[in-house]
Length: 118
Image 1 (cartoon, one colour):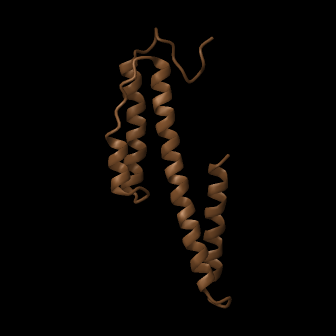
Image 2 (tube, one colour; image 1 turned 180 degrees about the vertical axis):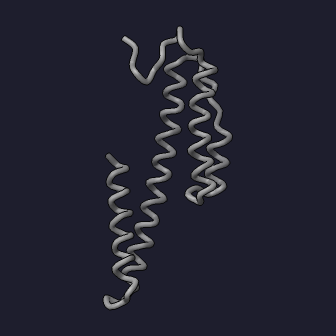
Image 3 (cartoon, helix red, strand yellow; image 1 turned 60 degrees about the vertical axis):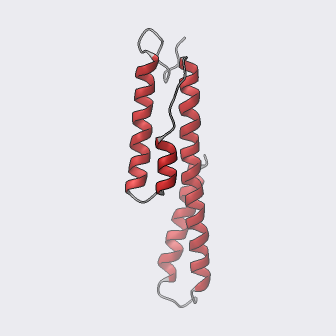
């Protein structure tokens, strides 16, 4: 039986599969870079990685690892934002009018991190 995410070899060749996954990865990292969610060094590191796999399973494994690394990178950046937010909130007086908005943003970031770890 063929898995839904894995087309059989009769329907797609390895080069086409690599191109499709590479296009998806490039869209993700380009968008992250253009929106400031990724620094230029990380962007460059992702861009230069090439897939030289010769089997479908090796292609899937290669891109699975890359997409996990990308997700880990984004989670780490989110953790950094949460820590900075906590420091900012701690620096505010309880009566500071910015405190409620900062707390809401902090809570939203924490929820986003929880959702990303599921």
